[in-house]
Length: 156
Length: 350
Image 1 (cartoon, rainbow over the protein chains, first blue to last red):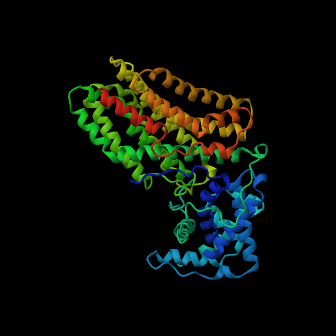
Image 2 (cartoon, chains in turn green, blue):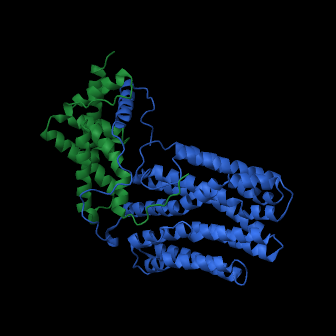
């Protein structure tokens, strides 16, 4: 067993960074499908948090909202979301996972983001609407349409 | 929070959940202790602009950083050096000076193990796993360590006359399984947003620890030999000091972030409690073999600046960075080192 000491002296911003970064990286990756892009967007979100630090009351919520908007904006400017990254060689997954991942990549950006917030972040519809800047009915519709499209295209 | 991998009645929803959970793992974890890149130095925190969730971040820092600093040092020193085996051996012996010392010090390994388990639970719930150094690899190891120490403790209580003093605290530990089940029911990704849950978990572990500490103090007062009794009381106070200092840092941070009569009063109460424990130790051990260890402890606590930082927080002039800096416990210092010293003297006196 290794003797350890805690990182006392860690400032509050660094603590938030350490706590939230990996979760946000995963969220950004699921929304964009690109790990390098996810890294960049998460970095940008933290830079924005840093700039607004004194004004932000809820850092985790600010980061999530900022990241979602960055993801949406990024996909507005590019078509990179359609590209797939090579899989890690040492993992074998059921074929339906790959198929679903491909289908997710082809969804409209707002629908894919809504699905990630609902089924990975486990957010209620009202919170998804707040983060995406739309009405709850719109968020619900995006999720519904995305699921309908997936059901339609899934291999029977 | 619900488990995104839990099957639902809707096949599409189930597939989406599973796919996202699986593919999220494609993002390898970054350096858990990494500093934010390409950012300017974080400026001073403006207390008047901090809201509840900023308070949550600070309390999370207090819960995790303070406890990890203390328990990490302590557990590494105890579990690693055969404490469990020593207790087992003592329990099988007829009552003696050694058995008495074992009864006095018996709760420490268990308390340390529970603190580490608590810290692992809290860091996981807050999404801070890997960000704060802990002496175990994760929940499984933390619980396994606790279970091993608890089994030894139970055997000690069951087979030793002195050990029976801890029956009440042991009964209270029946709640550990339920607490673990509650923790396991939170299966979503950890986040600082889950501070309320983490704080509740932390409080429930603290309650388990408090029961054992109460038994230790009750047992100490039954000891006839005045020197050993003094050592036993000092040992219990030292164990309690670890909890009190954690709570004082938390309350002081709260007084900085949400200044007001209530937060000031709570910080003042805990400040008085820590001061009271130190004063008690000085008074009780004066003129005994334990006086030197107490002097060292008091000096070390003063050197951390905790008392002064807490006073400033109570006066409305606290500093977050200073408060967090007071918990940096060096190996061989603070209450863990004090407990080691007291135990050595007790063994010599017995």
